[in-house]
Image (cartoon, rainbow, N blue to C red; front, side, top):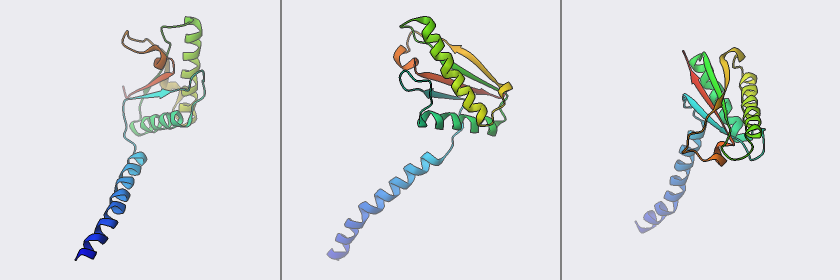
Length: 138
């Protein structure tokens, strides 16, 4: 009996770890549609990193699943720094997201690019590197 208990103790952590790992990886493979997606960029970059590409691909999938008729892509410009440069950076990032959505099959006629105005509560440093995608069906 003691051997059986010792054997179960040695096997249980392996089985438990495998179950937890399978559940976590399964969560990564699922697609939960939302109305909005936030795409973060690396500092001083207008190129999508792999994580950002996955977010845009997920948004495109939602657009297709819902047959959405209006998508707003909003690049944000921070409060600190040269407003013209910040606006150019925000627009370039929004354009990159729009380009990838179109490449992923989203109709260009359904996409509108709009500036994103920061609230007083948002941190400018994070907002500088953000583009929001909002999906609606009306």
